[in-house]
Length: 368
Image 1 (cartoon, rainbow, N blue to C red):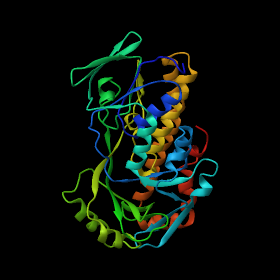
Image 2 (spheres, rainbow, N blue to C red; image 1 turned 90 degrees about the vertical axis):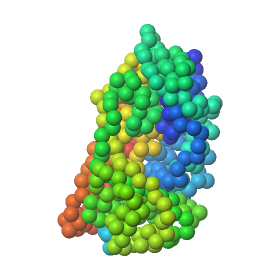
Image 3 (cartoon, one colour; image 1 turned 30 degrees about the vertical axis):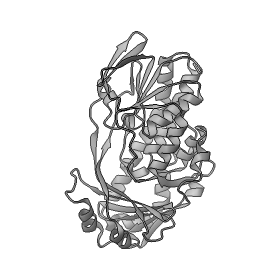
Image 4 (spheres, one colour; image 1 turned 90 degrees about the horizontal axis):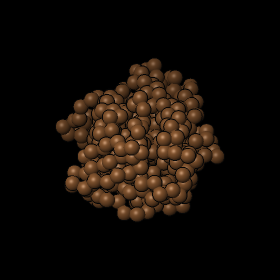
């Protein structure tokens, strides 16, 4: 169906939605993109992209614009809470032949995707109804406008309105973590992706280039703290490594609860979910953006190759489910490893941690 005049609506202009729009345009389609939020600058948080994300960006012909951004990451270092080494992962070796690992501000990747998507994003366009038609979908918006489409793609995140309106699933469920994020300027010098693992909590710092650090921390829990910065000091005040200097320099931090989306199906009629709307997980493996970018590549390939929308959606879901299921299961595995008491966990990681953590990505180093 490549180059066909299909009327396609992409709901959501985050990483997933813009990547889908880019992939569809490369395949000869001309999707409309809507976003319920105004065109404000995204929050200043960091993003770590493993090698499979770089491969997907290459397939989207966006590796060139991304290459000058952020910093290439060559090694992951895991430390205990005191800062003593546990294990390391050679990222160049792990992702050899796939792509390099990169850390960059999320807003910079978003700008690249926005430019690459082509066409204007219709902001402030919140979907209110999604109704099946013979061979299509009728969509209503809260401003009173409406439209008819051959395919509607919900790329509107873990709390997807499209998912609810199309009867594909309800709200996400808590994944059991409280997550803290910030970008620090002028902090300690950190050369590698560096994580300190404590008792059911962890602290990660990743260099973003230009003297910036992506700071990420999590703890087991299901409620937000009243004072996130104070809670970080309470949780990690006695940690070693770079953590004391990071905490001393932090002024603000974003906090949220992690959520999971696990669905029996990703499409109903001609309404399809992609990215976190279909398969959100906790961010432990840093695969949220990578899975969204891969979704975009595979969806465009499926639509181009299939003889009908229905056949394309079946092919797409059959290709993507094994990888997203792997990410979900390995995310849960790693979270369980982190939750083992340090007295039992740390000797295991010192002996076999590098092999264990590399295994979490084994399927993702293979072809899409």
